[in-house]
Length: 195
Ligand SMILES: [Zn+2]
Image 1 (spheres, helix red, strand yellow):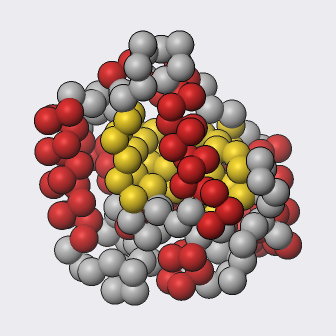
Image 2 (cartoon, rainbow, N blue to C red):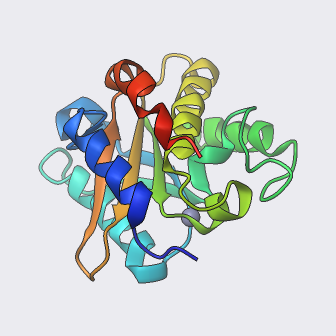
Image 3 (cartoon, rainbow, N blue to C red):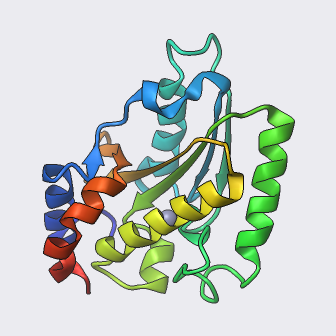
């Protein structure tokens, strides 16, 4: 069980940063003025979930008087929010995506949230069960597919995809914004990282 980024995954992570597929998170771009409704994985090994909760609070610091967050947590997190999810049948049932989007839409309306964050993490126990080790390339692909599906489902709601990476150490968890344009440009050269 991979606890932190190592080996090929660590190499790919460095490449993704170098090629600007992974970018520092810009508060302004994420529209957190009306609070943050996020969807993540509940695994708190090494304090990942605690870091994610702090991240969502910090994201709203200076933007809102009081942070307003609503976080969904399910194994694998937003990677289940696409019809092509490798989690289907292994971690989630076949109708999970429809049920999750139904409740997300309801809670966005009831709580008056105006943006949706897909906040995955890596390494992830659920990803390892569904795909295996060294699965960062596939994880990125699935996360972009989940973002596309979320945009198509939530229509006018702004959607952003983030991923928290665990590099080891108590204070070494970092969340990055995923940029599709740079991913598409880098894709052919990064294909060797496909398992
Ligand atoms: Zn996880």
